[in-house]
Length: 188
Image 1: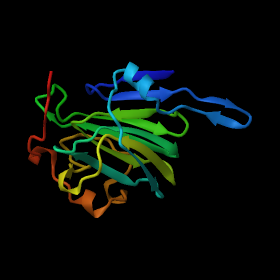
Image 2: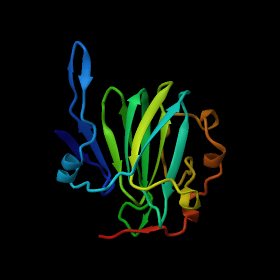
Image 3: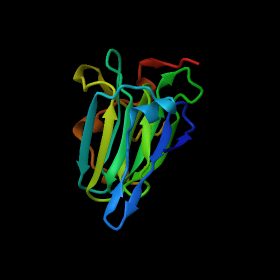
């Protein structure tokens, strides 16, 4: 059984699987293709990724891949907590350029479904935060893109001061949102 909440950006969904626990621990079916198909997510996930961010304030993103290898993601936290951020980059969408944020943690056990056409990133809220996510295509460096995490035009309220964020060189050099070409177009 999945608890599903549609978020403000069309297609982005917060999904919380059941957890069954006793004095030994817990069991949770975090992905079941049949259950996801029943809620309208029919993507074929081809790869699972796992990242560890040691420091609070580690920012990863905002990332996406374009044609011919765009990706959807199913993101969850297995240890720690993070603020997850999604930005609509589908030109013509009523929510184009709008971000949403949601906290994912080992405690709330929620997962975030990010469809194709959205930039995705996160900031860790606890040390040693581990993130696992499924993707619908393989990483392809020639179509790997991003947008500046701190672009004021996006209006994202990050939980870390700009000068204290731990960033990769790649994420420090991402372009502003206003300079992005049309990579995705909204289909009503």
